[in-house]
Structures are given as C-alpha cells and as structure tokens.
Image 1: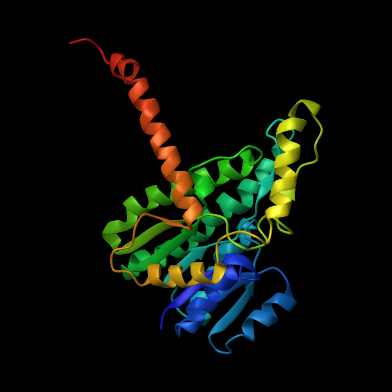
Image 2: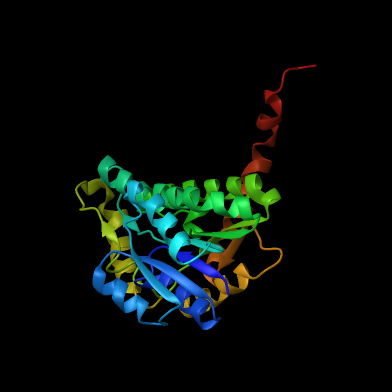
Length: 276
C-alpha cells in the first residue's frame, strides 16, 4: 500500500486523483482548508483517507505538517502537488499583488511542499513526485498571462528537479491537462476587473466564451485521476504527460510553429558565435 500526499483534495483534480488512489487500495493524505472539508474527506475511506488542514501559501506551516504526517501515518511514497487556481486578466490590468498571490499558491506552495517531502524520499532512495501543471505551461492564450507565468515556472522547476533526483530513485513528472470539466473556469477562477477600453474587443468576448464553456469541457476528471494512478505505478514514467485531446492538438500546433520560426531565423541564430 502506497501513501499519497495530495494538495487540494476538496474538489477538482485533487479529489479525483485521491479517489482513484483510494480505489486502488492505497492510503491518501489530502490537504484541505476547512474543518468540514477535512471531516468529509476522512469519511470517504476511514483509516485510509486522512485530511489535514493546510493552506500551501502558508510556507511556515508546510514542514511541520509533513513531519507530522510522516510521523503519525507513515513515509510519503507519492506526492501530488495539485493545489492551485486560475487567474484571468489582461496583463496591463492585473496587479502585482494578484501575480504574487498566483505564484504563492501555484509555484511557491508546490516548491515548499516538495522541499519538505524530498529529504525522506532521498534517504529512502524511492518516491514519485507529480506536479499538476497545465497545457498552459506550454501554450498561451490571451487573458491568462499571470496563470501561464506561474505554470511555466512550475514546469521548469519540475523538469529540473527530475534531472537532479533521478539517481536517487525518485521519478518526477509534470502532468499537463487540457480542458477538463472541473470548476477551474468557474467558482475557482479569479477574474481581474476590466478597466482599459482598448482591450475590450479582445477580452470581452474571450471572458464570455470562457464562462459559457465552463461545465462543457471535453475532459473527464475521473479519467485523469485514473491516469495519474497509472503514472505513479509506472516503472519508467515520462518527464511530461499531456492529458486530453485538446492539450495534444494545441501543443503540437505550437511545436510546429516554433520549428518554423527556428528555421526562419536560423541564419541569425548561427551568426552569433565568434568567428574562428
């Protein structure tokens, strides 16, 4: 039986991943932000589903929480950094405070939890770290600049960490979902108020389409949960795992565009070296 530590299990991907791990017979410790949610999660599979109160933006609380979990429940075999939220807003209209909050949760929270769990995994020479990023860690869309920046950062952290810890038997994967039927674009989305009329023709239709699309996304969250359990059990997991047909299509389109731009500017790129 593996012990999972999953951040943000009250809903969305965190809940479906936790449920899939429990269905597989594993033990899951999940973080939540209210006592009611904690009690509800603990009741899913008594003795195997354990809720802990933690806000990943509270850096000082993370290490004591991990130490208590490993002392009272057991070593963490699989870490899933899932906690996060979407922010919609034109870059010029969004505030630095909004960006700091986005990074506090989506990036620094995941990094702090990873650093708290990593020493035990390194000593045991075993472990799985799975960071839920996004197709938005590779492709971009107008109005999501702060969110994309946070996911690009988490993606770079994840890929680098994987190279640093591979010799310790620790596997690290960035899971990059496309559009799934969660509340990411609904109740959990933070939206900056509109203030600059020059962006109206771009942003107003985008905002309305995103709101209308909420609840109609193509991806099935339960299937993502099962895929993450399969990933955690793989002997040779990938560094990156795209999930969803839209994620695959959009990333392949961007790769083709990048290849074309590289080819078009190749003569400039290669002209930078010192002449021999």
